[in-house]
Image 1 (cartoon, rainbow, N blue to C red):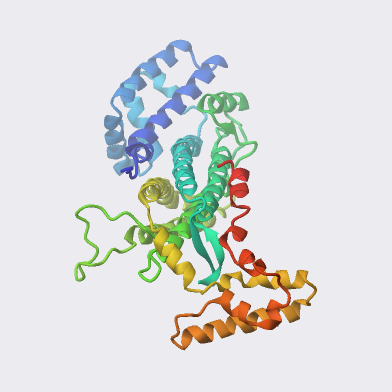
Image 2 (cartoon, one colour):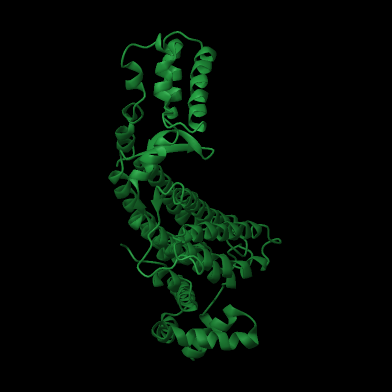
Length: 444
């Protein structure tokens, strides 16, 4: 069984050490581009780079000094540039942050962090689909009842349920790929986005090196509809996780028990009732999906800012993006473990199929009667009448209730069918004849 949860790699992306490392990288790339434009002397750039290299190998010291300075300066980026300038300790430090505004650094680094995060999430959804595919193929023809409104409808297979899950997380994969590209936008166009102090060539060179594309136009910031789209994609992936968590919670109910989440050695289900095996992990995923949706709403609230920029979005983003990326990483790894170890009970599925006494064949018989010339209304009345009689026999406490037998005993039904025809129609094979084709369409 796979035993993985949120990876340290995801948490590391959102540390101050990684954030300031990217800030420092952007500052150096800008200075280097300014060397190429003939603005900064090469010797000064080498001196700046030499000072910055110390912090590349001692990132915690940079964080500590930046935070110490921020207590007085009350500005995180100025605290950062001051800390780096102290380490450079040379007049060349005057070129550090030349022509830039804080959001040039912050938003461009933010884009890098979003790309780094999706680069971890995408392999996870791929791994999840592999696990789902394996379990789906195991149960491609395992019969179970399909339910609409929570009520028995027609037979399906447990494999088809899982194939549907496989397909849904294919869309989750596509969404993550798409928003990776959506979020990969940097900007180095200055205080109100006019590129007055740095040429667009500098912006293009830096973004190209970072694997980003320059915003075609910006204010002081990259526009927040981009980030809201990213967060909404994460929330939608979380909604898919919740959709399947709810499905498996229902399947684990005592009176259903067709599937059950792994119950590990030494685990306790209840402080009061030793017999309990609760779907607590599925319930956890259900709850966490709500957090992702709440964060997506906060990201939407960040879209409307004053004029060329205010700072109301910043405090929100420092919470919701690290939390949401780390949370979805955790949820994926939890879901992989659950699907890998999911206990499946085909005998209970067979037993539950029998609870509706074969009445899941009602549409099959209805359509067969229509083919034989009855109006839909006539056929419906005939089939429903026999279904209701079957229920009456069941509710009377008799153990001989059976829809097929009831149909066979009704001469108005029997006159429309040859010997053995009804039995052939009322079979699982009839319902499952296209199952393998469905799998082939999905590439399973």
